[in-house]
Image (cartoon, rainbow, N blue to C red):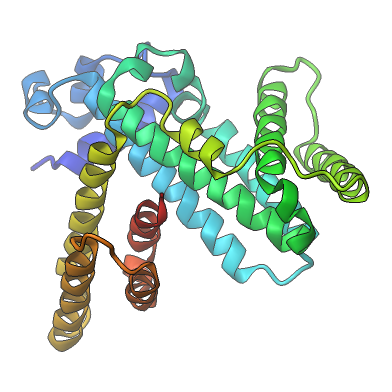
Length: 294
């Protein structure tokens, strides 16, 4: 049986999910794939590199499912926010050894992982911002970033409570409790005319806390994102003419990105066109997020 790189990633994901990163060895992953230990190292120089790939796959699946929930939700915006919180808690609890426990691991000092983690932080924060704006509208604009950071902190703390509390909390009750408190906070800040303390610069500092040359790192991630979109087009099962058209759109996007002052409106339009294809949507959304970062 021929074992691919993706087979190894799937095996590692299963074992990390069940046992955790520290308790899983490369030898165990190799045995699960029925290959020699050295064969794993042909694809991944270290266990940390393998975790980066597993984490990337796991968070990609999370954002793809979260976006699907957002697109298909037909209830009220507030009910949608609750549903998103429930989904987030369920997903992170199921994949806690990959999506949560990494903060306690030496992997946080690994340069490749820091880059990936910062990108995920940015997507999470943008998601929080979008949902809060959907629910509360333009009245939260004066204190938007403060609200986003407060909301993120509440989610993080209650997720830990759900994981660690001896007395089992209801995920649904916890989600509604959080939204109820955010409601009260929004009303108070609106009534008091709060202007907030934070802004976009606080967001940039948060997602790039340890990089002195994050622009270079960002460029690397953009190149990887473009390659991922191109790879999906290459594997796309549609007609040849449509495939060539999509490839040309990506080339136009690359050309615009390379300009000294790229037009964000054009980038948005090109990405929006690519997003129409279901097979490309997740990868394009990730790429667009990076391209819109200041």
